[in-house]
Image (tube, rainbow, N blue to C red):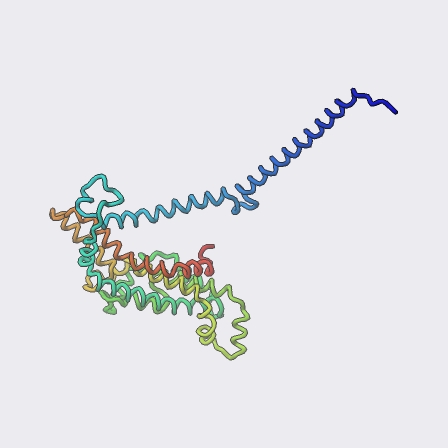
Length: 336
């Protein structure tokens, strides 16, 4: 039998140990690189909008923007429910120690809220409905029909959208005065019947962009069934444009509800006016009272309560119509 050299055994074991240690170090390095790569993908993402870093930046921006818009509303709500003790207490800034609802009642009486609310509601609703009908027809014509001087009328449409309303306000006042329409709702309602009014050109552009995205096969199929332009619009095109209609209705209603400029010029001496005018008149009366030394500690709380009463209907509408509004904005291309 051959003899085994015992001196070679420790060297072989050492070589095996070195190889095993090298493999373990290699596996450890691979695992470390894999973990770092996984961490990089999770933080940065495979695309720029998929990583945690991008999402964190977006949330930070959205929270800051939301705070900018919510802070005045929170201040308004907390101020209108303060009583005299909370108003005079310097330690009470945001959260009052007790809630007082009397300012809402007093603001409602100063605004003549019931009557002014119905006036604002009827004015904003009628203008919104008329603008939907007229602007939808005009947008359909620009998008799907051929008529003389189409490019010229499109350029004029864009010009009316860009041109500030202050340029034409004086001729408009003189025109409506000759018609005997001042101190009435007609200067705001009648232009909406013809696709004009507040932001009318924008609504025509919204409908035009929506109808331009529809396939031409819809027109061809309707013509094969013997439908003319009006029947094609009211039976096919207008029902399809529900998302655009939701956007136009909400925009038109909110803008006409909040509008102070045109009612103040056309109805400056009228007795029955919308809420935007009654709020301005109430602020003027309180300023006169302040000059006469009759101002009370409740002045700011009453103003905040009046502002809350005016924006409350809009908040309720948006609460119920939020889903359709967001869907309509996405489908009409306003977010692009």
